[in-house]
Image (cartoon, rainbow, N blue to C red; front, side, top):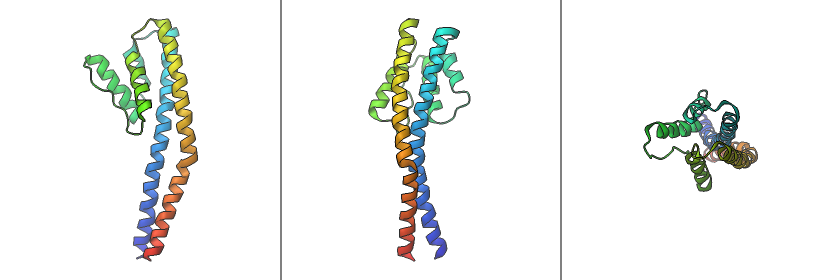
Length: 159
């Protein structure tokens, strides 16, 4: 019976951890988008490498949703097939439209206009990162604690 109660507490805490990690992933995703804008801005002003090269180097040490998004966009660029870009489920509709507009607009303008667009999107992604990070800081640990307490309450009721 004690093992069952411990398992319930652990399971509820783990469920809370999964919800909390989703908030963290959301913030990390936009942090990486801000970093991508910085790399693109540097590339436009100094290095002037081709877009697929810059995108592929931006995901060399990354795993997860950001890398999936950029690699799916690189695949679209390389094949020329008009397929959708992978976006994680925690991205809201407004964020989804912003990311898709940003990615599909890359490489379509002259360097000066492209530089201005990248700077504008960097500010937008920075704002999204700050909102997501605030939400994670405010709710992330609370979710784990509350779910653990719910599991403890269920265990007490069962015991």
